[in-house]
Amino acid sequence: MSACSRRGALAATTAFIILAAIQPAPVRAADDVLNVLTWCDHEDPELLGPFEQANKVRVHFKDIDSTSAVRTILRQSQAGDWDVVIMEETAAPQLAAAGLLMPLDPADFPSDTVPAAIASPASGSYQGRLYSVPEKYGFHAVAFNQAHVSAQDMQDINAVWQPRYHGHIAIYDSYLPILSYIALALGLDPAHLTDADLPALQGRLAALRANATLVGDTASVQQALADGVVDIVVGGGAWTTAGVGEGGTVSTPTAHSDTATQRPDLTFTLPRQGGIRWQHGISIIEASQRKALALAFAQYLRTPAAQARLATSSCFWGMPASTSAPLDADMKAALHWDQQPAYIAASHPFPVLDDAMDTKLHTMWDKVMKNAAAPDQPGGGDNGGETAQP
Image 1 (tube, rainbow, N blue to C red):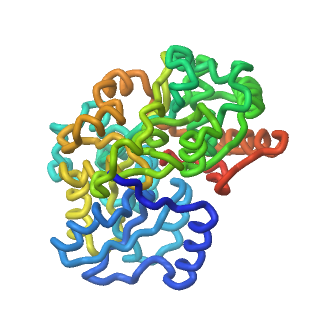
Image 2: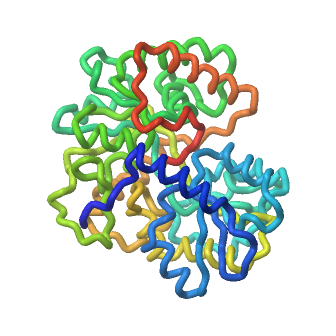
């Protein structure tokens, strides 16, 4: 596998601005275009090409960086603007309650090859009806360079606060998964935080920020770990290490690269206290005028071939929902395939908080990051977004 070209922070931002000016999203309703709101890992030609060719359509996608962005886009769109959305699955019930998603028939999405905890309809359902089905998942825990950091040390979630790691840590710039992870370190349930928990959370966040050398977005923390700028990424997982080579480039199977470019010293783990599980779900927009095509695309993403391509995306790798994805032994090892039952059991789903608590956590994050001495946020960060996408 050879490393694919990455979106450089400045170049990507500039290119996105230019593209947005030239081609505003979405493309208006047409039989030969499917409009999709999605993360960057769903945009590889190797993934989209087979579906486009088989259905004689073009998949037009728009990057999303948070579930709140999805809500804003859909509420400002006209009927028929968007057809499919791929987002953190726990966000689906709220959008379904607002009438923005189409109910799905479970019979259209067999789940016999999906682990029971991942396949559970609970997170993607509203009032007994299914609105989202899983297609990829991973963890916010700790990624590290095992040539410099003890794997045994990383089994304790509290190790990253130790003075010996001062200046060797990066923090993923997303407030909800990181604060949820810190909650686990405090022995709290991330899904049931109270006002009484906030002072301790803020104190631990401030201490972690003081121990870190940077706070960054997906590409930034991938590169910082690969380049040796840091040895630990708090909030990291397979998305930070699997397929990552020199310079932070992410490899894909179709690129036929030399596996020597990979970094076996980069790995991740879930500490014994657990981690936070993100889970991408596929939903169909209620106002779509191409529902049959949207359903076909959703079903395509659950095929073994598409699952393998999603798992090894050029943006970031992650676990396919289906265990039937045809991945080789090296790919499975990079994803910690055999450890998944234990990881799933030890992880907490991405929390669903009420608006008041969510606002308090976001405000806390912004305050701590603003007050940190000379904060470094390469690549512009995720602006503290609540996204579950790495």
